[in-house]
Image 1 (cartoon, rainbow, N blue to C red):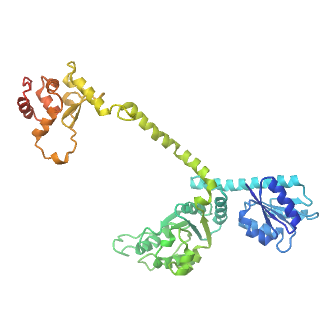
Image 2 (cartoon, rainbow, N blue to C red):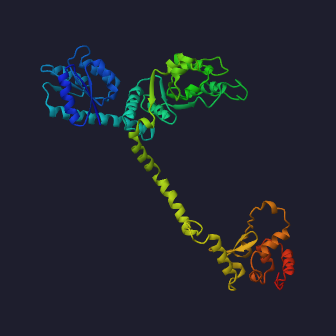
Image 3 (cartoon, rainbow, N blue to C red):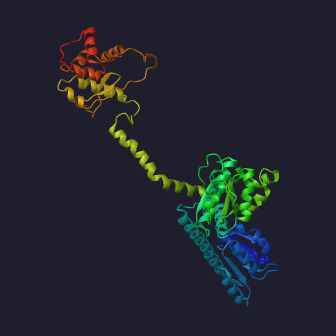
Length: 470
C-alpha cells in the first residue's frame, strides 16, 4: 500500500482528497503546514501540496523535499492564475501540478503516475548499485525502502557515515552500497575490523609503519588509510577500537593526516570513512567508554539498519532469493545419494531388508563353493583376515594386492600373529577354505594375511589337507 502525504491549510480540501485516495487503496498522511509535512516526510511515497500556504509555501516545501529525497514526486495544487508559477516549479523538480477546482479522476490518475515514477526511480538506482556491487539488493518493505532511499541520498555527499544495527542485519552491505553509489566508486574500497587486533597492532595496520618500528617489522608497510586513499575505508565494529587509537583516528577525520608508526613524517590522505557498530555509541560517549568528539565526527549522518523482525514483508522475497540461489546445489546434493544407492546395496535400505554385510557374506560363500572360479579371477575382498565376496570387484592374482583391513580391538591388539591367523582360518568352514586354493599354497597364505610357514603349521594343527602346491 502506497502512502500519500497531503499538505493543505484548508480542512475541507484535506477531507475530500483523503476520502478519494482512501477509496483508491492508498494510505493518507495529513499535514496542515510545511513544517508539519517535513516531519512526516519519511513515511510518504508521494506528496500532494497546496502552492499557497501561510508560513512555508509549496515552493519552499518542494525545495526541501528535493534536497532530502530526489526520488519523491511532488504534485502542486494551484489556484487559477498561478499556472506560470507551477510550470517554473516543475523546472525546479516538481513532478506535476493540478488546478483548482480539481477533477477527482484527474487527481487519481496523476497520483498513480507519480507513484509509478517513484518506483521506477528507486529501481533504477537500485539496479545501478547492484551492477556495481555484483549482488542483488532485497528490501521491498517500508523500513528497508527508507534505508535504501537514505543511502542513495547520502551516497552522493562526501561525508562520514555511521551505520548502526544489530549483528547480522547487513551493516557492511549498507557501507558497500554507499561506496558503490558515490563518486568514489572507481577508487579502492578497504575494510578493517577494529575488534580483530590489539591496540598496538591496530595502530600499525590503520596508519602503517616503517622498518624497525617494532619487533618483527623487517619492512615498511602502508596502512589501510594509505591503501584507501581516494576511496572509502569501512571501519567495522568501531566501538571496539581502543581509546589510544581513537585519538589518532580523530586527527585523521579532522585534518586528513596520518603518521606511520615509527616515522616522523606526516602524510596527507583523502579517504571517506564509513563506520559500523552494533553498540549505542551515543550512550557510551556519555559514560566515557567512547570518545565523544570522535562520535560526533563519525555520526555526521547516522543510518540504522532495521532487524528482520521489523521488516517481515521482506521474508517471502528473501526466501525466494535463497531458494533461487541454492536451487542448483540442493538438487545436486539430493541427486548424488540416489545415484550411489543405485550402485551400492548398502545405501537407501528400507526397514526389514537384510543388512548389506549379510548379502556380501552370502555372495562370498556362494562364490567360494563354486569350482569353476579360478584363483586369479575370484571376486574377493579381505577384511579381518577372512575372504568376503563383493560383487563387481575382481582381483587378478598377485598383480593387484590389497592390504588386509584390520578393525581395532583395544584389548587384543597385542595378540601374537599366530592367534590372529587362527581366527582368520576358523572364521569360515574348514572344507571350503581348504578348497579355496587347492594348488596354490602361497596365494592362500597371502589372502589370509599370514606367511606360508604359518599356514602349513595351522593346517597340520587342524588336520587340513597339506597336498597343496607351493
